[in-house]
Length: 416
Ligand code: EPZ
Image (cartoon, rainbow, N blue to C red; front, side, top):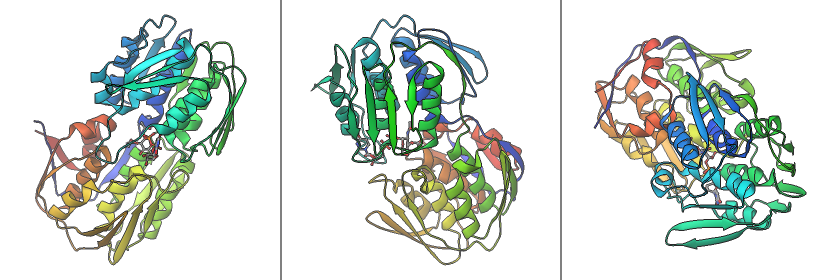
């Protein structure tokens, strides 16, 4: 099994360019099932999860071509299957995002219930609540879930939690439904806005994306178009923390600074200098990192996908920091791994109390999910010795060339 090895590295220096957002590219690829003409996506990150989603689209009858690095052409004029195979769903729960498009495009869809994962049970009740409100019949048996609808009719849907996936799935189902759909308490993440702007390019009529109320007026059919994926705010945050934790001076390029405001604010609270400059942000670390607190929240709050990476930084901040994880019920799997490296962290329900230590030391550790894996890479950069990280397939799912990008900044990181 391949591992990533990280040696104690000097302060990172230089420039790094951020790739397209995984969590925007995945729903937009799923939404491509709604187009009846050619779709060209640009700035698509080169990730395992993207490969799996392309496999899912192909299995449903879409034509998918990689035109060049980061450029994918999709043509979904002949969708001839509505069943997503178990082994694809089990590889990536985001495959569940094809349900909304298939339901509204061909009136039926079947897939296996998406499994939970390391960070929580990951229910889909809000997705199904939305599909039912639009007129779909849902059946669940033997671990499979199917949805049928002769016709979807717009409706008002309230989301008990501003779920990103449920907002995306319901929005996609509503674009071809008859009449108007209103999603209340919708997720406001930038990836929702990117999905809506993509769908509107294809001919959809969506207003309010980015606010908690999204209005979708059903149209007859969607065409094609060209769309560039927004930059990945979580990859950007990860590299910003890499500069902070090593006391480096790194310019992170191709960012939308309004998407990373909580990360900028929290890095400043630890004593780092953060200079915004158009579509780049410069992070100058400090040896005297100060403790701070974070509470993860749906956007525009502090992103849960940055919680593990920030906890690594906090383990070296002087004083006591508190992390409260409000989005997922079990997103502290990285704590035990960080403690093996000398971090002083205590968990109390959804809170973690971190007492800053003078140094971390290397140890064999395991990535338990994508962001926890990134957090361990960051820890390895400053830990004494060589840190061996196992289960690195998690990292490959969500980071496009993390070793190359970090090595260019002076990190001592390699795969074996
Ligand atoms: C998306 O997952 C992201 N994945 C996650 O990123 C991210 O952590 C999450 O949003 C929150 O920002 C993609 O976009 C592919 P949710 P999603 O539905 O849509 C509860 C990463 O590392 N919930 O907003 O699955 C759920 O239990 C990944 O890139 C319900 O109760 O997240 C959780 O507690 C990890 N019922 C909360 O909402 C539902 O029907 C947030 O989940 C759906 C969700």
